[in-house]
Amino acid sequence: MTYIATFYSHFGAIRYQKICKEKGYSAKAMPVPRNLSSSCGTCVKYEAPEMLLDKEHDEIEQIVLCTDDGYECLWKASDS
Amino acid sequence: MTAKKDKIAIIIAGIVIGIIAAALAYFGNPKNMGFCIACFLRDTSGALGLHRAAPVQYIRPEIIGIVLGACGCAIAKKEFSPKGGSSPMTRFVLAFSAMVGCLMFLGCPFRMILRLAGGDLNALIGFVGFAVGICAGIVFLKKGFTLKRTYKLPLAEGFALPVIEIGIFVLLLAAPAFIFFSEEGAGPGAMHASIWLSLIAGVIVGGLAQRTRLCMVGGIRDTILFKETRLLLGFVAILVAALITNLVLGSISGTPFFNLGFDGQPVAYNDGLWNFLGLFLVGFACCLLGGCPLRQLVMSGEGNTDSAVVVVGLMVGAAFCHNFGLASSGEGPTANGKIAVIICIIIVAIIGCVNTLRKAE
Image 1: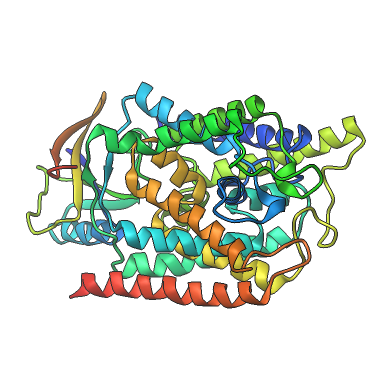
Image 2: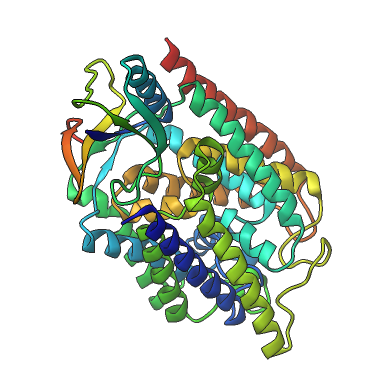
């Protein structure tokens, strides 16, 4: 499964990418896709058997699953 | 939309924006200033009486159009999302500083492109400063810089700035005595295309920028960080389109819109150091803000109140620049302006450190 996580800061994305790689997942930091968010920040696209949600990680804005039709939102920070 | 389609879309948008920007100079705006977010916010501040520099007072419909065009597109595409609360006062100070840099250089990053398209080589030095400033910002981003998260806000909060812009447009149309307008021949503020043409141009640019996420800072930042050139392509498309339009308009009208060189450029001076440092400050501050002044206007139209605070910060900054004699002119930078740019670079660096170190704790 391919997931994309978006963040409130660039550093949050870099930290998340590191966690993904430590778990052995293929992960890449990149600009947020245009049709996923209006933000022009950084996201992490990664391949994993399931969504990686680090509860300690308060920089995550949302996590989506990449599907054939686009994106399916799996998790969103409260009040975002 | 695929990545390739995205790239084509931003190139087309850039071409349209470049043509519109160059054409506005033909229809009355100052040369190489079809669009300049900093100059136009400064003119609007002056018209509202926040500063009293007589040559630069006019409510620029382009600004109003950009916000409303972005707002309309965001609503139509269900992307209007009122949010905010991400260090608003810090953003205000960064925006204020960015404006000090813009008025040192005499233009925002958008006008930097238009100055390049008009053959103004001083803007090339400014561009180098801008890119180095973004690199300085990237160092902080990589070290953990964050202005903390945004929060969902009530609908009314997101509409505040677009509604204020409508109010300012009414003031332009009504032109009551308490609104200041530069008199004919007084300076750049007196040079403008017709109200409705400017407004429509703004709406189109705002809409296109909203759809494509066009951002001068984002283009360079993404290219350096990820070797992703999509946003940069928009930047290049504007440059090429405006350059060709300038050449065509020059040959049609007999008035040159392209003049290659450092000297005698419209609303510009040729002191390389301060052109460099002015846009260095803009690149540095805007990188920490997450977008250039155009992008901030567009995001404020999408309901982002942090960006609306940035727009207010830019306007207040512009007023202070003229009240305190910080703004440059065609004759060059002022001593006060030089001191202000140095102070603002230090302030932006302190903001970078404080919001990075906090993260490391």
